[in-house]
Amino acid sequence: MVQAALLSLLFFFENGPYTVDGNENLIPNPYGWNKFVNLLYVDQPVGTGFSYANSDYVHDEAHVGVEMYTFLVRFLEKYPQYAKLDFYVVGESYGGHYVPTVADYIQKGNAINPQTHINLKGIGIGNGWVDPLVQYGSYGPFSYENNLIDRNTYSAMNATYKQCVQLINTGDYDDAEQVCGGIMEDVLEYAGNLNVYNIDLQCVPPPLCYDFTNITNYLNDPAVQKKLGVYSQGIQWQTCNYEVNSAFGIDVIESFRYEIPSLLNAGIRVVIYNGDLDLICNWVGGKMWAEGMNWSGKQHFVAAPMKGWNVNGVPAGQSKTYGGFTFVRVYQAGHMVPHDQPANVLQILSHVVTGKPF
Image (cartoon, rainbow, N blue to C red):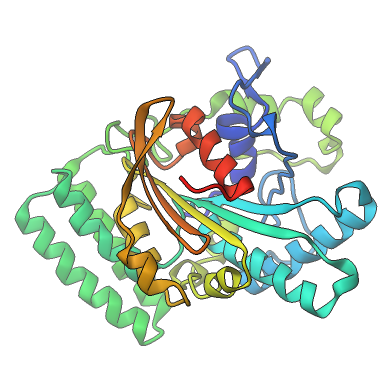
């Protein structure tokens, strides 16, 4: 689930200022998030995209947090014109681990080193892998409700999930990764060539189910790499770096919902959004962990109803909010919501930045 060059993909495939056509030309993205915010993309953990290290790769969120916090402090020291601006951390997919970690490190760093204060105002997580213990359990009900499996498969998945829970709760993460991963295998065995990132589509081409050829060719063009200043490093850009992926084998099982309550209690806005066609980080599991999270406003958040959310008078999804915490279900969007519903996600971003309720 660790997407090795995810930020580069976000830049060109989802929310950056440009996309890439078949002739390796940059095409302006009319829905780029740069329309009203400054964007800072970081290929991390080290080893993803064009980032590299002379030593071992990192393998957990503690290392991610330290490295990202150090980078941000030094970046703002070098470019002080950005230091006093409001700051937001937004991520997708495995960003459900990265975003809470980085935001938590910023909050703690601000308390310890007020002279290097980062003006953190909010975070956003799209289709995030936040709490595996809960989210593995959502595969069964989501798949059954969407007619991806039959009742017998659903029962088998529930049995596997019980084993998954036991292994996670006892800290046997190595075996948990194998057993819990088998829950998704049950779905694919029944549903066939399903795109787990968008259940309305087939997985073409496998294994990532999307064609990133244009982006890959562009980023591996020697002329482009020279302009980016990375050609001399001899790095071949790839959509996924499986060496980095394997280093996070234990990290993938751990939950990162526990960092979020302190952010909320400190007045930092949190927006969680999920496309409702995504299976792998589906909205059912997202809502489950969001409502199960212990924080000062839990009772009121759980009691808040899901209300219709419209964009330009057209139903775009549902949302619920309490005390700076918002959960959004986005209609007709898969794992990569900014790609599937770009105009609607721009409005989500505006809520993250302004704090205005849905």
